[in-house]
Length: 294
Image 1 (cartoon, rainbow, N blue to C red):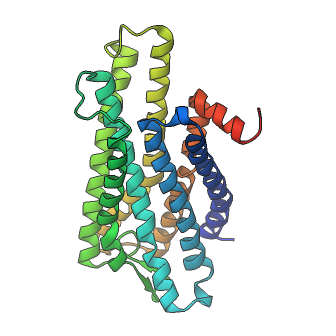
Image 2 (image 1 turned 90 degrees about the vertical axis):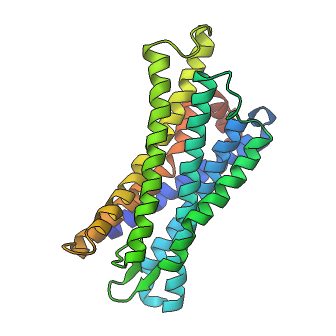
Image 3 (image 1 turned 30 degrees about the vertical axis):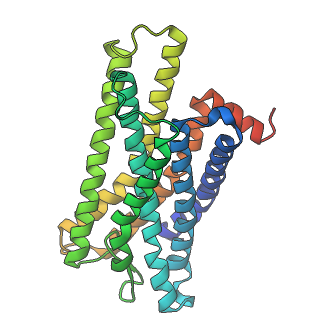
């Protein structure tokens, strides 16, 4: 069994675990009134985007890698274009993580600045905006992704495509990703520094409440790092290939690396429920309640 095939089969149980975990996150918040907070609504938004990404990720890879010889070209083109849903979901998660990092930054470092504070009313508007913006940013992918008979795989901005339009779109998409990563690291870097080193974040707060704030910040930081580790290598690989203009790029090596970064992306989709279960007492209790452990 070659490495791409092994990675694909290995990703199936990982994705099933991630699917179940994210569905449980949605159920926990939906069923518990005390969990209806702006922050948890954003976490549910990420869980929904992860569930969608997991389903399309499996369908896309199974169709274009294992079943392509038994499927007509029209269906293969549809399967390739379905990547627009995956990139939309990934963009939803990344924007949501940016919103969470900025919200935590303002709540803890600038508590009197209410301009960027979220409440139950404006968080719903924020979620709608996140989905619309993500869909618009990912829409060009729908027109650029096609099935390549020459390489027996999809061809597009995030695959092996030498067209100038795909390269430009990819570089713009990558620039957005790098900006998002910079914002997240700045916000969480400032919070970690204030909470653990300079003691400038909530210095008057008692020990227990301060500990909870620390756990919350670290949980969101872990979610952000997990997402960047899962999504970042794919962006970097595609950017490097695009910068080469298709020259001096060995397709076989590239294809193996592509399947490796896709596997990392699939793994990243199951991390958030694990972080919530181990870092949040309310989510931990929610998982126990839903799973019948208490």
